[in-house]
Image (cartoon, rainbow, N blue to C red; front, side, top):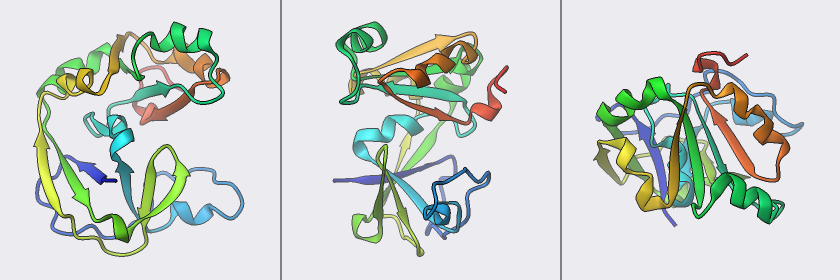
Length: 175
């Protein structure tokens, strides 16, 4: 297994735990996830972070609860789909991000969409620069879809699909 942290900063020598910028409502007993942590994502879910930092996006993939009809309708032959507003395409094509590989032994699985956390300082193993982010999806069997607005996709949260919304506060008409 491999863990990564994505950043637009190419010069991170060590990651220090810090609280999330905008705390989430957490279930009782998991409030600590808003506190000072270092976050990482496993390789199977890295598609969630192949975007400019502030790019609003919705990512979907099948779960054990996904009906075959939903899978066909929303995913076709793809393993996952990523939706972004059309206005972000130019930045997706132009921006370079940096993927830091993290030492697995420093992290604990939080059981949520491939996310892992470390409670202490983490020194990355390696840094890889990734440009032309728009070309990173097809090799991962992810369908990148441009939409005028993410708002009409809110109904996805009522399906049997896994749905992750990231940086939605930056979407044009998200409320």
